Each structure stands twice: as structure tokens, then as C-alpha cells.
Image (cartoon, rainbow, N blue to C red; front, side, top):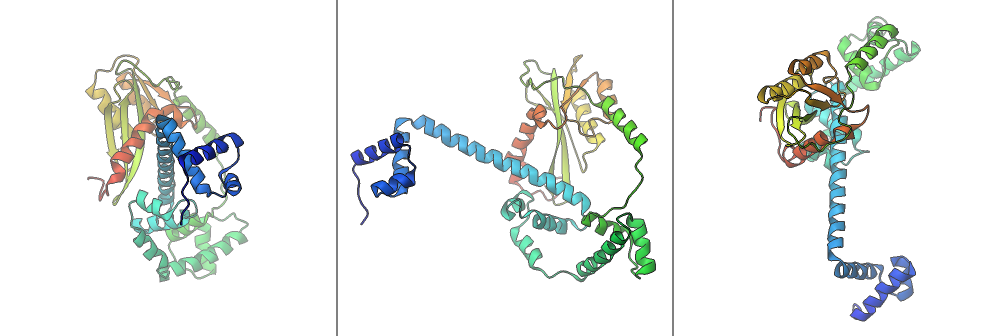
Length: 346
């Protein structure tokens, strides 16, 4: 039969816990009371003494959990985009291969939810015996590794492909060799064009605008500062990219554009819509990150055409564009992640 304790006894135990500095388990051993009971009594006392503080603490914990979840979801999508870019198999197979590759870093349940696939489909794919094509790929990759190692790591896909045909009797396409080498992280040695690279870096530095916002996110007048960024969401047709321009004062979207790639045209269309629909005052600041689309020559010319002043976040500083990061996080949570999108059109 469970012991019954008086309210006076519970209050005394709470006092001992607070004054002794001992943990729940240690105090439970000394008093012959379960640690669970002591923890509950302390919790009940805190609620009675300061219910608002307890409620705020619970809300903070909830927000922290949501933030952790959002960060993990963004990390999964970022990794998935990079993975799909190097895997030329069918979309469904690529998704399953990505989940299998990342299951040590993220739970299968979370990845399947973020990528909008059924866990049953993933497990069915995982437990299915490898196809004859996959077995041939494994055998072919073994030969490719031998050729690559024999060349002291200097052969790229053209020379590996040639040796496969001439020395080993493998008559396969060059694209197949390229895919297997890319997946295995094998590449040849090539001459680096230092002069061109330095010229490209110098040209890029000229197109990177200074940070004119400096995280001063609160702006009183509309059409003084615009924030811009690009996000992505997975559909059954593949990735859908959204570029948006948001006004710092009104927090309203001024222009947007969607497409199947994060291209220069995407961000040009978004800012063109914004500038075309609103009276642009002289000196209006357009702030973005340093993505290749925003540092392109064409985008810089578009800003000049509309009389906009370019501003960009510091290198590797996503918090410099926190307004857009927050907007896209809300959009993903409250709209995009709640539905299955069969195509880029709906």
C-alpha cells in the first residue's frame, strides 16, 4: 500500500531539499522517500509560489525545442540539396539513399517527415535486395578504384574510362564512370589556373556590397530598407525555390519569384516586381546575403536600374539577415511543412 504523507511533511522535505543543496536521489536515500515524490513536491511548491514564472519557464523550454527542431529541419534540407545535386539516380531512390546515409545524424522519422516520404517506403527500399545494376556498379567501382590507385590518384574519369575499355574489357558509358567516381569521391589531378581564379576572386570582391544595415532591423518608414533571400522546399517534382523581398518597416512582402533553381533570374524577378509595384525613393537599401545570384553582374545592374543601394551580410554571418531567416522559418513551419506538395504548381 502506497504511503500517504501530510502536507506539513512535504513542506519540510521541500525545505530540506532547498537548504541542503543535496540532489533528489541523495535526499531520497536519507529520508526513505522516492526521488520521484521529492521532485514532484518541489515542483508543486514552485507552482504555488510563483505560477507565472513556472509558466514562462515551460514556454521557454517549448520555444527552445521548436528552435532545435527548426534548425535540424533546415540542416536536413541543406544536406539533402547537396546530396541530390551529386546523385543522378531517380528522385525516389535519391531520397531513400540520403535518409540511409544520414540516419546516424538524424532520426529516420524526422527525415521522412521533413522530406515528405513514408517511412514504410524507406524501410521497404532498404530491405530490398540490391538490383543487378547495383551489384554491377559495385563491381565496376572496385575496378575503377584499382585504376585510380595505380595511377597514384592522377587519373580522372576520361582516362579511367579509356583504361576500362582497353585494359579491362568494361564497355560502359563515360557518364556512368563519372557518376561512380563522383559518388566515391575519386577525382584526377588537373592544372590549376591560378591567374583566372585570382581574377575571379577580385571580380567577386568588387561585386560584394558592404553591410549598410549592421543588424539595425527596426526601421520606422516603409521603403527605406528591403531584405531579400531565397528558400527552397521539396515537392514530388523536385525542389521549388522561392525568392522574396520584404520591407523592414511593414514586414510585408514587396516582391517574389518562384522557379526550379536558385538562379540570378529568380532574384532579379523578385526585386523587379518589388521595385515595379512601389515608389522607390532614392537611397532605398536592398540587403541580402552573399549568394552567387546576389553577387552576379546582372543583379547589380538591376539594382542600379531601379536606383537601389546594395547591402550584403558579412561572410558566414546568417544573423545579419535574421529578418528574412525568421520569415522563411515561419513560412516553412506554418504552411509548407503542413502539406504534401505533388508538384511545383500546387
